[in-house]
Amino acid sequence: MSTAKQKILIVDDEPDILELIEYNLKKEGYQVYLASNGQDGINVAKKVQPDLIILDIMMPKMDGIEACRLMRAIPEFKNTFMVFLTARSEEYSEIAGFNVGADDYIAKPIKPRALVSRINAILRRNVSSDDVSENKLEIGDLVIDRESYLVYQGGEKVVLAKKEFELLYLLASKPGKVYTREAILKNIWEDSVVVTNRTIDVHIRKLREKLGETYVSTVKGVGYKFELS
Image (cartoon, rainbow, N blue to C red):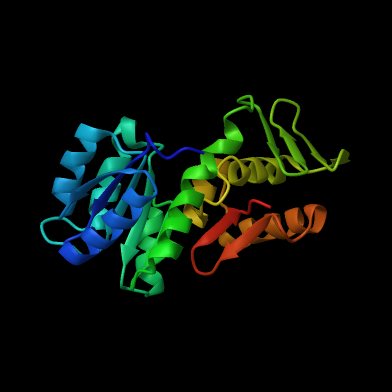
């Protein structure tokens, strides 16, 4: 996939970090834009409409968590990829990031080749949906048909309960994206019933029993994601 027209915005208050990431992403053919705090990041994003935004968490004026939360509330950034870049490795900061809509998380110190590889992979997440109808997903040997509530694996029909199907479809609709338990509850069960984390875990276990262990992975302390084969 060509990167020539893809735009990436980097928001970080450390000039050396901005320079390092900018240099490596420009080598890959991306258009790169810079901002030094969350508020400036929002302003630049509104002007350039990036495909992906890299946000540091700890910044002056406005931190990355708040900037991500505000941008996710703006319709044009609903589907923009947002990745957190931070030296903080505490589990709570990762959870906070995913809770406000982050798609991924990259820890400092930065390893340029690994960073570029991760960014390339994130931006490829849309490829599988380019030639697929709105109600059908075809990923690897899986066919997931939302209209008929049917799942086929390697041509064989797999019987799923309604909530199992809805959970699989949610995760598979954005391969690689981490869904927190809160996001899963909101999307699958809404506010109609009382559901605990245990309920989600049971449904995940059932999906793994029926489809194998390779498709749905656990992100410890955060939630679940669908893995591309």
